[in-house]
Image (cartoon, rainbow, N blue to C red):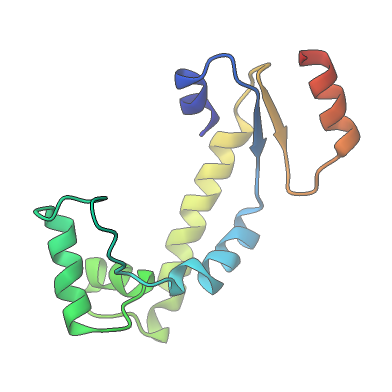
Length: 131
């Protein structure tokens, strides 16, 4: 979120892209939910990490483990099926909706609020006033 970035980089200029929650939820369902749920990256997570141990167990039970499978197992103690699609979609939508509300509420001169439909003239005016 822009406020967190500003906390660490107070002199930065941030473009705060506010997405439509429905569009982002649909994109999540088509992409992220299908991503592999277990990918080994040596040195990133300590081997004794409890969540990594959990993921290893799930991966041992299902070779093609996905992010949606992990979500389902954390909530229902079973792997993802199409019957759970509405529940996953509602949960993701709620997160995306809340995220958009927080992003819209940001009012800081170092933050340029925009949507995915960029108005390049507006962005140029914003930058001209800051640089």
